[in-house]
Length: 194
Length: 126
Picture 1 (cartoon, each protein chain N blue to C red):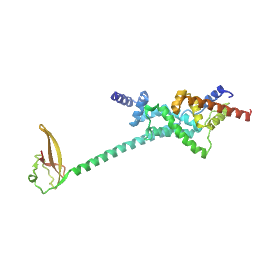
Picture 2 (picture 1 turned 135 degrees about the horizontal axis):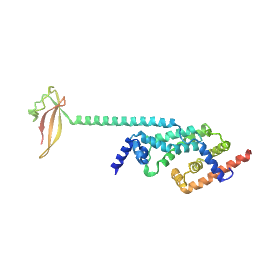
Picture 3 (picture 1 turned 45 degrees about the horizontal axis):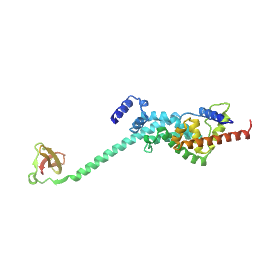
Picture 4 (picture 1 turned 120 degrees about the vertical axis):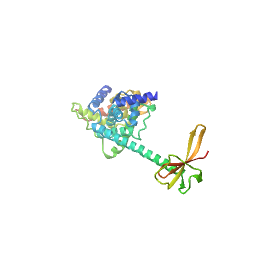
């Protein structure tokens, strides 16, 4: 069975068809030095990792740094991904959480969050920027459930797996996070009426 | 954005207007880092093989016993090998103990190896 798997990996790798392989096979090939396998994994998962870091940090630059660190860790000795313990995406988001927290600890001392990446002009841009700022001011444990459930549209079960917490915890945090966000946005509207 | 539904709409708008993926530069840097990592791993393997070979050679040398070349073969029970002739005079030699499989079982023998690596004589110990 193992031999069959190795032959399948080799054939797919030789034909440049890594995208047909399962996640585990790709990780196996990547650890053996297959660059294409690594790139397939990167292209498959960089979006969710980048967006998570972006919405958690409010900075495109930090999000790109975090994305780079996460994938550097995946192929280097620091990467301790074990398929038995969960999906690769949950592992990568877990690593990204740690890096974002590290950046936030530094950032809180150095500079405020930047929210300049909403490039597109739109009539509700001011509202969206305000929402973005409000999101960045709530506690990270509440922000991450908003990011995963509302922005990434993961199910509660998936979010719980990504965050390594109970389903009920995700539900209660999301409820509280949304209530806080709404209150802040309503407060803003009252303080600066149109 | 006065209610829960309004908040959901705004969050969706925020998501849609935000960048969706990291720039191509990130992928390029990771690709280069992956190649560097691969080269480093290969060099670790080469270093490991060289180290293992050096250790084997060192251990083999310890097993070999240098023999003064002035000894005659016959005195120490050695029999000259018919194909052990070498153009290089025997100045330094070493005895290497080997085990030879024969029809009647394993036979232990000492090989007299010259400084040029050519086995000159053999002595059966069992």
